[in-house]
Amino acid sequence: MGVGRQMRVLVSGMLATVLLAGCIPTSTVPMAPAPVASSTAAIHGPDQAARAFVEVVTRVEPVAEEVCRTRLAPQRCQFQIAIDDRLDAGPNAFQTLDDAGRPILVFTLALILEAQNEDELAFVMGHEAAHHILGHMSRQEQSAMTGAMLAGTLASLGGGNAADVQAAQDMGAQLGARSFSKDYELEADALGTEIAWRAGFDPAKGAQFFTRLPDPGNRFLGSHPPNAQRIQTVDQTLAALQAGAR
Image (cartoon, rainbow, N blue to C red; front, side):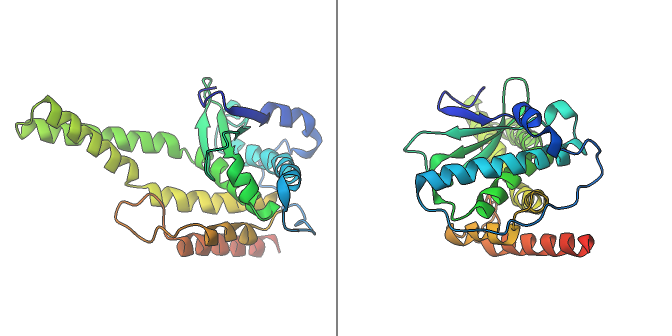
């Protein structure tokens, strides 16, 4: 799968499609939101966290797949959900691809256990799915490649030796990859808000996850925007979705 033996697939996009076929619209017309869950009780302990995660996967994955199909080919929208079960891995979630190019959304056990409610898990899952739907991985790789080529060329023209050129390429790739990373995060926050909302969760409550993260501020070429800006993006997107649903 390309993400290590520690990754255990919990629910694949294809399996979810079979199990939940009656819940997945077949058209590409934007779906009406499901009723917001009446209970957003706090998660306490591993058992509740496991049940909450399965519930979120069951509801969010089909919505993410439907939203994905409005933009990408169906075979690129069969999300697989994986758990990194290493006990020393910190709270994290990310999107990657398997060897066939299908999307995998990976969650560490620490993140699942740290979530305070299903809304937070749903928002994070929607956010990571949005990165794939919006093509952020390939766009970031292209930016990194462009940065590496430009920096390497400049170093070579400046008389640098092979080691200098390699160092310049490494730095150029790093700078290129980070050039638009803040924009990508905000784009994923917005689309992730829509996915979580359409699955019947409260993205505003889910975005409270940011309040417990260290604030990256607004550093030059930082990888993430300030937490307050991310929460504002969620609130604005949710307000627009709610206004359009009336």
